[in-house]
Image 1 (cartoon, helix red, strand yellow):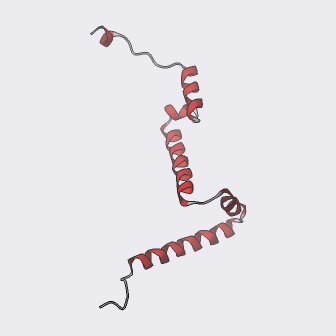
Image 2 (cartoon, rainbow, N blue to C red):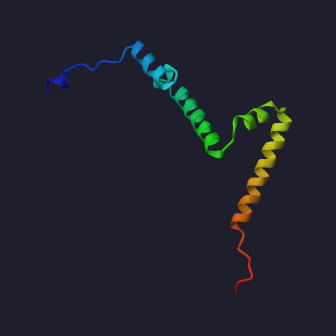
Length: 97
């Protein structure tokens, strides 16, 4: 019961900064929802890149393109994804009755 009456202590700034360094995040991550959401988006993007098999050379080549070149590649990727989805959902055709 005695513990319930103790005031809760808040971690000091140095402790928060140390924890942030261990996890490779800014200290604001623990307090700022916008900062936390932005970092979460970046982590999800990195995981997506890793899982998709895009390598550094491919990403660097894409980043080196002009904005128009990047848009052309994005359009090509979108068209290819649509074609893949259409092929996956197309009824199977074959000679089996």
